[in-house]
Length: 80
Image (cartoon, rainbow, N blue to C red; front, top):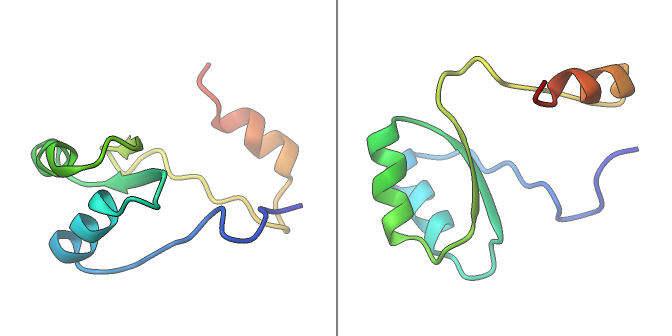
């Protein structure tokens, strides 16, 4: 199980500097981020039109690893 190499990259960093660099980079195809609606909208206007997933309430985090009952976690994390 797991992801192929380079499919998921977690990059911690200061939001304004790190987030901007990620959002405008041409070789990054998708971004998932957490933050205020205003900041996300501001960043999206500077982006090169990539797929974006927003987490706006800090209530929808999912962590699935090799110690997790993956099938049930994946099913529970989908929209109902």
